[in-house]
Image (cartoon, rainbow, N blue to C red):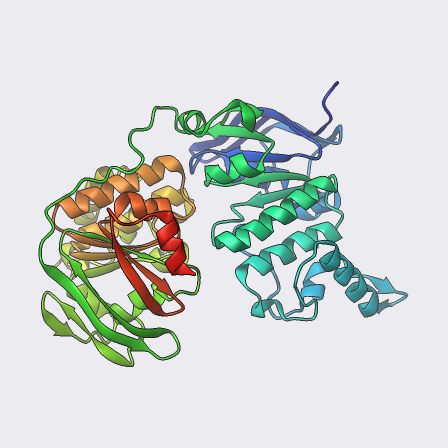
Length: 493
């Protein structure tokens, strides 16, 4: 039986100054399927989404939607044609209600008046159909991230979208929220809606997707049924080479206590937390969203106020009044949101690398450009940062390369104790392997890494010890030998 394709891409090419982001990409997507789209950061996935959504126009090639050739001049044209995108960054009007957000750009009218009752009734019908516990009158700002994503999906359903593109929808979801998301995505498939599902979490691709397309360096590598390939084969196609050991953890020389926290309290957030970290150790912190992991790091580093308790660094009691105090004492933080908190997007790669250690590039009160060039190039090469030049604005780098720039910044600062908050979120398997290699190199050099992560395989593969948190409480610690996913999850909940 001949396959029914909702979308056919034919020779799509998209170029930017000095970069060919898509190079003659051609493949088809079957109607009523969940179609995975995978590839390393910089493979061309985001560019392809923007071409389909009418944000970019291709330099060459075209695509057929329902058998008709399309050339979208704007996202509005794409949406009217039945294509919607649920972006990784939530794009909702936070002060408005759920129902109002579902009708953005598609207001129901009764004569010359807005049909508020009609919109609420339609919104409630969609919520009921998806069997969701969401109040259509609630302000969107009051919802969890997972429910905000579902509101975006309901907005697409309300617009009669036939092709829904989901870009990294699971990046900030807990396992329970992910189960709800999967249920909804499968429901949409049953209703005949086609899903393009983009994720760096390959286990999700195999669990959810009927077919999968691999992009690499802007080119189409292969489209196949997920049943025709295994995880190792998919990774090899994505990176173009055989991957070595996923977690290159080696036992280093672990020294004495370098960081000690005693009975730390932040009212309403952290409850009597005590632990010790040793030099040369990778110390993991696990817990579900809302456990207080990020808040703990911020309190220790002087970003947020501590109500009671003590922090000791190298045996000396410290009382950091600001993050600058902690930086001056040899501590650093790679934040969860690298785009907003870890980098200045409109500044160059070299400026981002040298910004926290300016004394190394200043002579006689003047910033020396040649020193910025020298040091940024040195650290970019150490971390294999892929950038056209050190003067390229960091916003134009892939997610994995942006994360390497953040790490380079703290290595240049020579931070002795480095907090890594979700260090591999949203980056591909190849970049992950390089981040893990860098962590291994740091602890071999005597530095201490405190890794906050929602990915249990990552914690199990890289950490010497793991502390588990739940709703601001410390639930316990496990050594690498003791730790299993089951034991960690039991503590998490």
